[in-house]
Image (tube, rainbow, N blue to C red; front, top):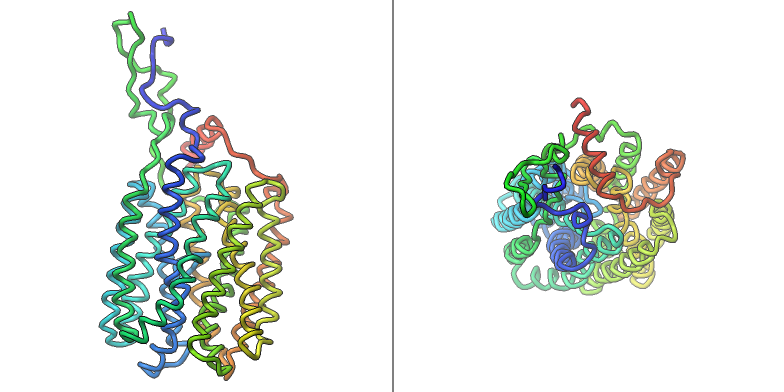
Length: 460
């Protein structure tokens, strides 16, 4: 009886991530979004001194703009990231495309309104919160949809997408410096906001991946085979699985909590060097034109680190969790050496080391998150991860500004201390049963269906 029923929906085999094809268009779009969001944030240090001098404010006061803004590039964690679960939930309920376009409009509005520069509170609300909210709404779905399109090549695809931050930051350093010189910091904000409107174009290209049959079982139609006049729905296809919703219960999973704690400590330290690199170079008497080149160097080696680590992780020779642990250790070493710089050459060398190992970390930390929670819960996990990590990014830059000395060295030493604490978290993760299970393999559609059925039955 059931042999004549042919579900009009994709088979389990067809529901697997394509690992190519139009997926590479999505990767390029995500590459652009990373550049128009994270790269802007990463080079915002060029505005730091200008805004501080214009309003005659303390370094700790000015740094709140970045602390409110930062939405997770490496995440980027901050006040606006508190609404990252909202972005993830919207991706689940609607589409990644819709959320990215909305984020582009919000980012533009924040920068355009920041042009008026009425006072510091105004900048907190516009260039800080509103633009940060737009970046959160753009960054979260852009990186999420890449993981949906790829499985076996996920590490490489995520590395390429995240490299957009570095490629654009390499260009934005000199460009922002020139814009500030020609139009002032207010005019530069307005122009940058116009550039960020291209996020909407990238969002249009992020075509939603067709849902598999088991995700929409209640909506699947059936047809009969030739010769059978009846048309009925196969009871076997009447899955109890309902449309996916945001899962807050991830905070009860020990492995996710450990990874979130790692994110908090990392966020408190990893954004200290990009933010205070420009003021540090000024305090050493380095010319403004050479200072801008430091940001370009940081972006260039960051770019190389991401691609190289993504390529190596794609070979599945070493566990991604171990690659991430090694990168954290090397970042700590570079931060120990960075405060010893006393001229442009030494500062450039240490900046290069930091940028390279920072890039290796960013290239695989999203892939590790997928390994921690599994693909069915990834959208929810990404939003929650950004939310929890936001506490680190929210207090990190202001705390570093509070510890400022005449030569800005203390901020980098504090950052080093936080990275060392992050390494201790990795000791805990290595003791976790989950992380000792080896390199995770792409899960089958049948396994995902089983997991989703269990989650549906779990009391909320």
